[in-house]
Length: 87
Image 1 (cartoon, helix red, strand yellow):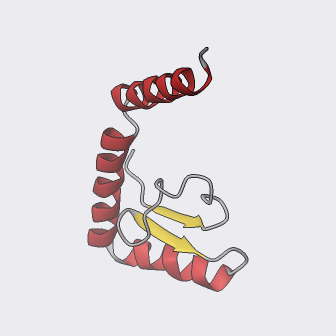
Image 2 (cartoon, rainbow, N blue to C red; image 1 turned 180 degrees about the horizontal axis):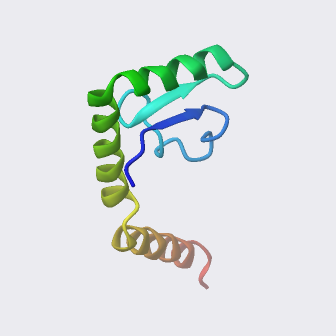
């Protein structure tokens, strides 16, 4: 399933790389239903933009969140912890 993203800045504050405003979705301010509605309507009415956001989201997920990439990040974390705390 390919979906475009509309998210609140509050929802992704700990993972800002997930939704990149204007690249793979829209970020709207928390508590702003008008901005949320506008972003949703923009995607509903602009199929080309919606498709572009979907494709960009897939590319970001494959590049940044692949299993291989996550393993590399975890290995790096463990190596850094070992260097810092191993005695």
